[in-house]
Image (cartoon, rainbow, N blue to C red; front, side, top):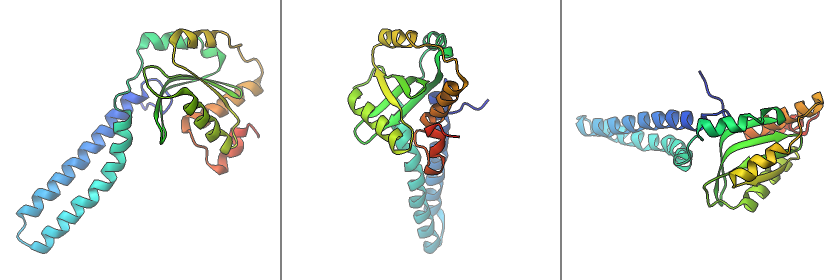
Length: 200
């Protein structure tokens, strides 16, 4: 079963998938280096060395986000079940990791309601104000107005979710779904910006 980004368990699946691909690249690089030592032709040996160097580039592109997210684990099922008790309040996202130039933000849970997102970011030195400003600007630049609240305390986060009202109108539900799609993709393309703004 494919686990989509924003679904529970995504971090675990992502690390397994990326780790397997990095391993394949490493094997390919080692095979090319070893083969370059064994072939009789110097020209062919040089070609193999160049190929091994070129293979490092796509592996590095895979390794960078892999290493950035490696230490962040999927939350426990017991904790996840407590969050699911509020699933009727809006759209839920799990296991997100937002990378910035200044810091990395592991967002265990994100509750999306019309025009608003409540994020839980535990066990990290990431600065809340920097992360909130970055996310709000990113959404605004892509036509999706969304206020961000980031919580580090578990009890405070549960209390904030408990205060949310259950959306009744179809319009509110659709707006939450559109924001969820933008949040899970993180950056909306300009051609899809009207979906983020909630227009038909």
